Length: 229
Image (cartoon, rainbow, N blue to C red):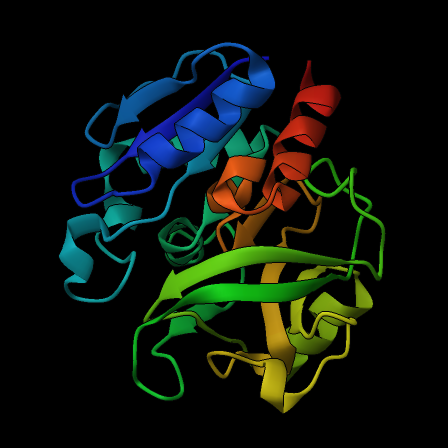
């Protein structure tokens, strides 16, 4: 399997996800600069977390127009899997790969902590090692993670099984108390129509090794390698 991690000015989780990918793949992913216009043949593209362009204008809005994103969008349209994590989720929604938008957290504060997520849909290459209805633990670190879409879009996502993860408690109960940022319907991640693109606010790469306090994230990367090798 070959993977590429897109690097923007202000990215700070690109190396984290590269380490997690290497641990699962057994080889280093390609690090592709945002001003590049070509991507080599790869099986997976990761748009990582961070603060691309310093989060100026609107989170992800400037990065969505970087030269490399034209190629990322073309590859996604052709079926290459794309994983957008945190700022990467913001970027790929701004680029039109996923519906909705990420707004300021409801409490207008930056949040950095571990959260529990209920797996809502496991029928994808991203969640093949998870069980629908099970609970995983990933960290969050964002000020603009409040997922919003109009009611028709939310209903369509629900009806098509495109809600990937929801903020929940350790037992899988979803409530207002388990929603860290005000996201509509506690949504933490969504899929594209073909489930080849996943946008996710929490960081699986930050809990991908037991020495770091947990390895739920490694299940995602191991599953991607199994599916794409």
